[in-house]
Image (cartoon, rainbow, N blue to C red; front, side, top):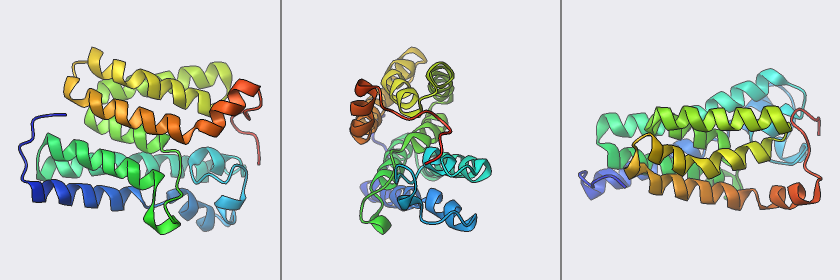
Length: 202
């Protein structure tokens, strides 16, 4: 964590606003806007871009990816502009938690990969680009979204350290741990050789 310089009240506001921003489920919004039905009843039932892609609507999936990433980045940038780096990190973490555990959906949200990457790009863009490149490289080789996400998450603390963002390593570890927790069913399917490939309709 960076040095705590913001007042406790400011940090609480950053967490609250970050959480509320992160809890907006753009996958569900896009599915309804494009007439795709209830995303929770499609494919894996996940509310993220990968499951939107399983409907066959690439535009809806792209917009979901962009907006889910954007809300994490926006939380960081707004908190940084109005307060300091301590508030920015807490707001980014809260946005991620809001996506994974949104109050509006009974705390049953997505797996958080797009929000994770958007948060990371805003916090430490070189490490964020490295994480995105990790995801893309593994996806190109394996065509498995979950494996790509796990690889990107696992390497993120290393990227943060290598690029000189030591105060953000703890946050990177926290976010990576949550991503692994949310991917437990995927990990079981990966070990069994049953994980679906990117683009397969659900």
